[in-house]
Length: 193
Image (cartoon, rainbow, N blue to C red; front, top):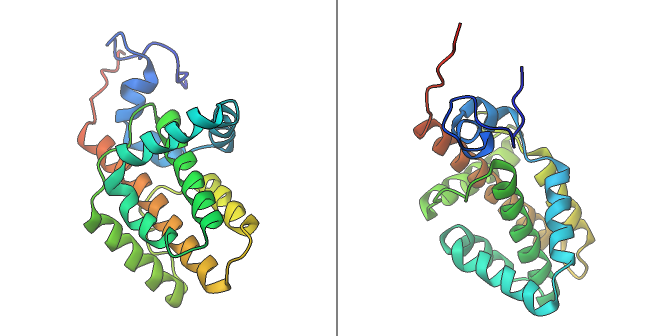
């Protein structure tokens, strides 16, 4: 029987399932990708903010996840200003969707991890393979980012490709960070018979 995300955790901790064993179960992270509804919810949340509060939310997320976003921002800064803003907003929406869906802040992701995923994604493109079959798939987040890139004007095909590879790398880093965190923090759940 599946336990609702907002129900009390069956382990008896007194916390909600999404903030306890759901987060700590590697199987759930791997088999429970961020749904499209989580992305839409963040976009709806942002659309209700005043322009000042919206800018503050973006700035707060960027500052909070500086290490994770440093590599992406370096790529984004080479693009036209409007594209830079759209790419940054799309990335922040993705981070918030991950946090809201998995019920926890994004685990720490370092530059070395991002560089490894970027190299793997580039190699996979040229070899025609899946660079990271062991990383939980995030089809809805990738589709959201691909659609956002498609809608961005004034970019060359190379800029569009570079942006997508960077964003795909970013999603791999986020997804694997949650997976590794859940494996480290796995709490055994007592099963009563």
